[in-house]
Amino acid sequence: MSEAGLSVLIYAVRGRVVLKYCGQLALVLAVLTLAPLVVALVETNWVLVTRYLILCFGLVLAGGLFARLPAPDVIRTNEALTITVLAFLIPSVLMAWPMTAANISWGDAVFEAVSGITTTGLSALDHVADRPASFLFLRAWMQWYGGLGFIVLSVALLLGHTTTARRLMNPVDTGESLIATARTFARQTLIVYVCLTLFGFILIWPLSRDGFAAMLHVFSAVSTGGFSMFDNSLAGMPSHLGAMAVMAISFLSAVSLPLYWKAFHAGWYEGLRTLVRDVEWRALILACLLIGTALSVLAWWHGNPAPWYQGMMLGFSAQTTTGFATQSIATMDAASKLVMMFAMLIGGSVGSSAGGFKILRLLVMLRAIQLVLRRAATPAHAVVDFRLGEQKLAADDVSRVLLLILLYIIVVAVSWLPFIFAGYDPLDSLFEVISACGTVGLSTGITRPELSDFLKLVLCFDMLAGRVEIVALLVVLYPRNWFGRREVV
Image (cartoon, rainbow, N blue to C red; front, side, top):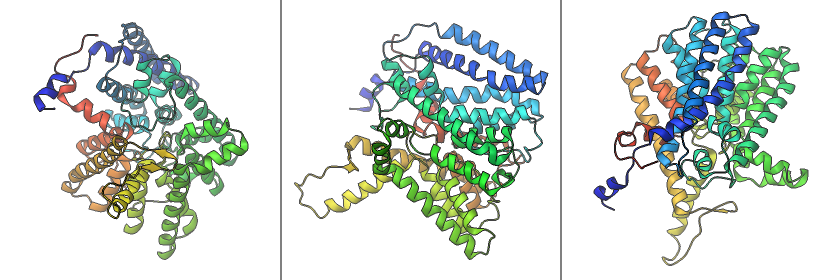
């Protein structure tokens, strides 16, 4: 099709459609804001209580108004992608206002909010241990519902068995969906997510000997977010065992959540076989062990204390994109940083709260390379199916996977250049950018209050791009997405 012919078929988003579903998201956000409101009441922080009440009132008012708009028969792909981005962008801006009550600037508050909702865990603050409990709770709480996903939560609570629900759950058909009904999937994901949260709290509370600390770290672990109430992250835990428990929950949360549901309902024996036979689950375990071993050997080689503990903890943290740290990243050797960057770029499983471009996509890419090599040695008329495990993949699925990986690399490269021009160390800058794009949160020390607003904005873009997997954010920034012909609702 010619460029002119394609332009005729391009439609801008319909304002009424976007407003309707943003209105439903606003109602969900109003409900979610009640939790930090209760914490602020317990803390008797009346300034914060007032701000939360104003936000809740505004959200209910706007949500009640816009949610009443008529639903479209079909929601277009660009509209679903736009709503997905706004689901993370709007809470970031709104929740920055309560965060400023902790005596931080508006810019830093927006950065913390974006880092929270995208489950990244990068912080521009020097110290957090002395911040109010209400501030620490809000950060961790935003990571928790950001990890679950506003879209998943909203579909579970508000939408029905409709084409719109499926489109919001899966704006771009990637061929990776495990279910046919969006609401069923959303509810199953919500149940698994809550169960992981409760299990994590029961496990970590006795080991941390502090219920509030356990709750905050469980919220961050289940969302693979990495915000901690300690300035030195997991190194501030009272015991290695407590830190290891947090990391164990992080690993469990980097596994595809629908896989847990499938395994649980298959019975204990078939369920175990379901886990073991899942190619991505096996690859995640192998990747965590390989990265952890590599970091442990490097730590031992450089004479660092407790090399196997530190190496394994950081290896699992990087691969699961959780971002908890047990030592300073800035003091690590270059080889260890390179190993961690590779892990952060890949990330966890599809269908989990982990970031990165996902292990499944790496496996698809490696399989594609293998088939190219095999086809070079086979007759021209030979038919070779593209399979990954027991699943057959179409050529379009493979193309989309390779495109997404390429986009990740491009975003990392473009975001890296401003840090180089600003005079930061090239390796540390690349580490920081990959950490943001992978929604990891590990930092070499570049992200701090003195970092320029422009570079903080670059990292915010990277965090959002990594959370919504780049394509959605690019669609929102495309002018034709907003200006042009509009289909009648």
